[in-house]
Image (cartoon, rainbow, N blue to C red):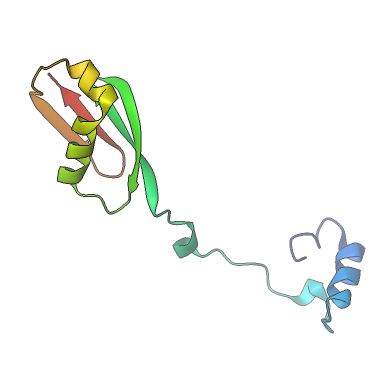
Amino acid sequence: MKILAPFAPHLAEELWHALGHTTTIHREPWPTFDPKKIVAETFELVVQVNGKLRDRITVSRNITEDEATKLALASEKVASSLKDKKPTKIIYVKGRLVSISF
């Protein structure tokens, strides 16, 4: 209702009173932003092999570097790109990606 009020003030006021409020909606405080409510519990981990996107894996935001690397190397798409070659360099960017080079 508070967000509707600037665009349709008369309608918002009528609906506000229909909900049982006795004061005017235009005197109510504007909704506030709570940064704790927008934090996602998971994210999409991007896996690259030699700079090319090979897979996206949904993981917990608290994943460690070792866990992320193991998941990336266990992926079928990554395994088919590696073709029995051993990775020479693995870069992990927290909350973003795992980059594998061979």
